[in-house]
Length: 433
Image: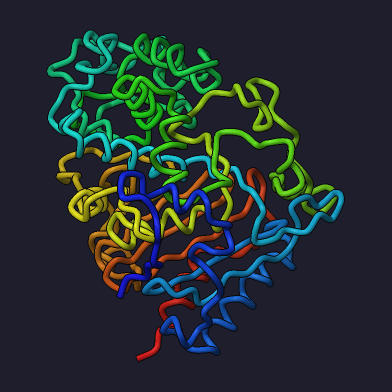
């Protein structure tokens, strides 16, 4: 059963009804409870206690978590602090840098445009970005450590852009000439997507298209393509076509002044002081309080747990929530289907694809063989996470999603718990027969 709520609204613009409703009138209306959602009371009590313990031991400063099955919320709780320094409590309405959990949102926007026939999976990327027509490829490294370049054997396709096999680097990790160039040219600090694209066009690919899986700048490139196809900024397109239709009032590329008190800070473990400390703001790019910052489709959004849960439930419902449909079921199924052939030399630096039983669809990782992956989840479970620890997964076989929101980067407490594995195992042990 997929949970939806009745809407009275104009058929021509079904999201108008959602925009007019208060957040407490939209799904999730309440915590339905363990039994109603198909879990044991003892199991969900154990899950909540485990997450609270992770906060108590300072593995993280604070956490908000939600578990839902068949549209019913088994638990939606918060613990800890937004800011350790002033003991500002974390609440269900706290706001988070979701970093790479932005990617599935951009992917949904792309699939909406795909349904309109504005691009095809076999299109060359250069059809939409002519600057990419003459990309070079790093063939190897010479004795001095410089990249040896070769021409493209063929143009990378949109499919390869969506599943990280087009060959692009990222600059987040790797000491090769390509990723070094991403860092030296401050690609991720670009003032706008036009500048970002020009920088990417001047950097070689890591490999010939289709030869290697490498977590890449590809979703920022997708954000630029959204702008080219629609004539709108990425932020404005997402606002009009994803956030407002879904009632995601807390999700945008910056933090409004009136939301400052809800914005959780990033913390890390300070071994000398033996406790968590707040991470200083970056100075190499506009911060999250700047409305003019780069609209990064790969990692720039701020969101709340409730907002992102609505996005996830839309996917669980195969494209629809509260009477508003963003995608067809076929598009959602396509997004969550592994599109890697197995011939790619997979490298990630982040776990996930390249591991047994793991692949990649459209801006999601996919567990296509849970037994090989050592997971109790159903086949086809899809997931992703953000650099500050936000994470989600959706199990379409069991109609479950898990969402955990934290803000943690850098060193962790020695012996810190693996919250994701702990939560996953308790969840499946708690399912009612």
